[in-house]
Length: 230
Image (cartoon, rainbow, N blue to C red; front, side, top):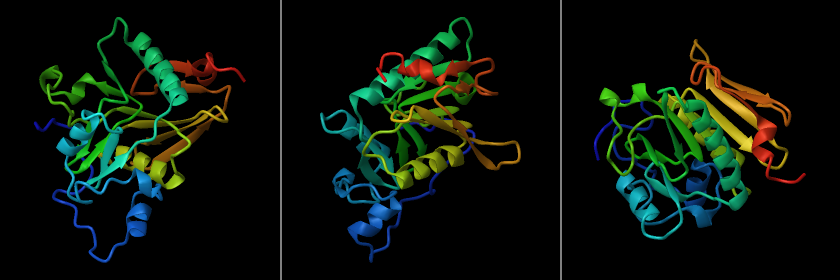
């Protein structure tokens, strides 16, 4: 797999060495208290690679991310898919007529580190992230998104989502939107000019702003729920 230039990387520089004394419970806590039935035991935890995440995606099994060399199944549902599609549609409309970047869906896996692969529900990547402004041909792109969007599923845990946000921001992602379908709210995570992580709550009638990542982009949060009854 080719290495794509990024503005920062996340994760270790070599294979993960999980403590030999760890139990499955320790591993679950390390991954954010996720249910055990979402943790793959093959390849052996800590030894997984981006190729393993790619293989899991294309062999008819559940969609998986790679977290510290551990394949972790990502919970996905129809409502989450609908909301993610609405966000992606708004972003794509914004990009019409201006060459700022590309929008990917959930199956667009992104390698953030040697043993760290995430699949945001929606991601936006500015062209500056790609060497020579060309899209890579690798099955998994080793490039950090400028915007990562995650729509919460019932199976997600608080610890898991905190870990995801940290992974994105540490890798160089500029903004992360976490959208919660039940209260129809969102939390915007970002890093300010001083490198300090910030978070902003967006209520049901609030607006998601593109900021410096997508100048002029504004999306009413209620707009992505237009197809869902109260």
